[in-house]
Length: 273
Image (cartoon, rainbow, N blue to C red; front, side):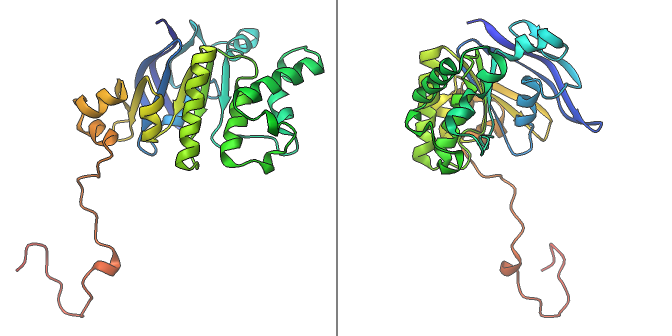
């Protein structure tokens, strides 16, 4: 497979503080690549730079060979047309119907007739199993339905690459599993490439071809491989613990209710007996 995205020596910084450094990986055409790691490791930061929302402090991000970080004008628009994005909360416009939300990218970036835009938007909703909800308002949808509607809007312009930020967040296990299967179906039917930020292990093992693992402690990428290989054979013990859902070896401090009551007597130092 060829690389459709190349992240090379990527650095991210906010207010002069380095958040990530020396991150390098490729995304292959037609794969599902997951960006994972602990809280605060920079998963969403990488995604936001990959879709052009932020400029990196260093390095390059190539989309189909074009640097999205330096492109401007029509060149930048041409790159962005290859990308579809669904944000964690769905980001649906509450004053529009589901159909109107999905056809919005078509209104902004095409000159199609209204009936053609409606037909395409309805077809995308049918792909995600929401065609019967086309005339409903976002407030009438469940959490899982909102995620599907956001995904339908993300693929409205037939992008080559779809970015999903925490797609399973807030969903029950069955709804989350259904969404995983939908992603795999879209990958197969439309030959799309997915870049997904998530820390949901069941989803990772179901959908990911490979996983980029970030570690906040060292502020960089510490692993890239198939999730089962990372779980069973990673040379990094933290990565193995992450994919095996193992607790930290550090003993927590006792909660106040568990501590011995203060009797007003002298405190014994650690090691006294």
